[in-house]
Amino acid sequence: MSPELAFLQALNGISFGALLFILAAGLSLIFGMMDVVNLAHGAFYMLGAYIALSVVRTTGSFWVALVAVPLALGALGLVVEPLLLRRLRGRHLDQVLITVGVALVITDLIRLKPDWGAEVRTLPPPDALAGSIAILGNDYPVYRLFVIAFGVTLALSLAALHRRSRAGALIRAGVDDAQMLSALGVDTDRLFAVTYAIGAALAGLAGVVAAPVLGLQPGMDVEALVLSLIVVVVGGLGTLGGAQVGAALVGPADTFGKVFVPQFALFFIFAIMALVLLLRPSGLLGRIRVIR
Amino acid sequence: MNALAVRDLHAGYGAGLVLQGVSLDVAEGEAAVLLGRNGAGKTTTISALVGFLRPRSGSVLVRGRDLTGAPPHVVARAGVALVPQGRRMFADLSVREHLTLTARSIAGGWDERRVLELFPALARRLGNRGDELSGGEQQMLAIGRALTRNPALLLLDEPSEGLAPKLVREVGDALVSLRATGLSILLVEQNLGLATHVGQRVHVMNKGTIVWSGTPAELAGARDVEARFLGV
Ligand SMILES: Nc1ncnc2c1ncn2[C@@H]1O[C@H](COP(=O)(O)OP(=O)(O)OP(=O)(O)O)[C@@H](O)[C@H]1O
Ligand SMILES: [Mg+2]
Image 1 (cartoon, rainbow over the protein chains, first blue to last red):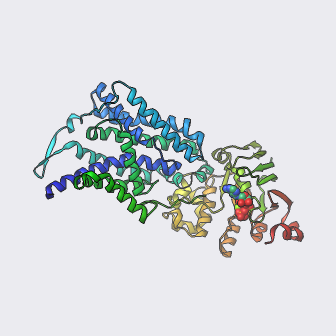
Image 2: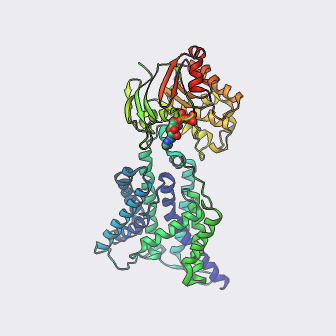
């Protein structure tokens, strides 16, 4: 491969990694706080993409969708957590199963809605980001550069909030020992609901940002779920830093895997995951959880 | 009115019953001690008091308010603060965050500054994470964190566990000075020296019930109690 092409593929890999970070951050956060692998995460992502489709059709603006979709998915999370997950508190397997149920309901509803439906749909990028620019003598889509900038900015802002804000401190404490936090006067039911909502909102946001690149089609939920699971397993479940590291690794690995060994691209990232699990079972940045 | 009134408390894990009718009072401003061997049910009692464990039957009243089976944050907001067994520091929070995140400030009450006056050793560690502290520092921080809640009732579960004798004395002196402020205290201990130094009233627990109650002086005279329920 020529150096120019390698550079463009690297950009593709980074941009895919940025998408994966947005997607996996919420999954990791929810697991860290509630010990629940949210298998509805892929469906939240898919729903986000389809809501964006409708918002763009009615308002004509991608930017409205970028704001409205996370709000809508956050609201959905605020309903799902107290209504379903809270009733099963302490029964982790049942909680995971109910997230599968949520995923099935969402994907069925998407399939049944006539203007969303079973076919492949596309969402064009916003006009301002529609064109290409010349990089090293090749045309490169501006929108992909936007994805990189957006993902990196989001990662940095989330990290800063996590480190410095009061909400971030509550999440760090809750991830570590939610019961102790409750004995200090914090309503952890509310904290869990808000965390779940933030996670759902991030999944929806990933759906909007990804739609102009990856399109909308049946099955996109499962694909997104599998990839984000790999990211958090590689990076380390339950931490924001883990999602960052995992996405930074899996995004480029997937892209270059598809270039070099197209038939085995998925095998390539599974191999990375297996290697990490062998060497560091808790993920690259994962902490060993103490069972009390 | 008592700071704490526990009546006929039954509680356990799964099908098994650990507490089989615990009754005990902590008077307003009193420092009471709960003694008992490993596995006697002391931590289970604390768990049932703070809402970690839902009692099967019986009642828990804090300053006359019925908190039986209430969730932990409700118990905490009613004025109960816990220094748990094992300290349970937040690994990913700085010392300063431990003293501010869950603080409930009242005029003239405990805050970060006053906790650092009580435990000057923590002042040098404000930027450190919870998991970077020594055992003694963790214990001070666990007590300080509970004090920033400005509780009416302070529960401590074996604060001397794993500490060197010098640090045990330091913790004991801190608890005596807290007692002097009029704070109501329930101290769970296995260290008899610390228990009788701090406690004004002693309750001995065995197999999930209170089997003896009295003053530290009476306990010193009751050799049989010590032999049957406390010695190893
Ligand atoms: N989470 C739990 N699940 C099941 N059984 C438990 C649990 N915690 C404690 N037990 C059991 O309950 C009984 C009382 O335990 P508890 O922790 O209350 O004792 P303790 O008096 O605090 O002892 P120690 O001084 O060792 O802390 C013991 O038999 C113990 O094995
Ligand atoms: Mg105990």
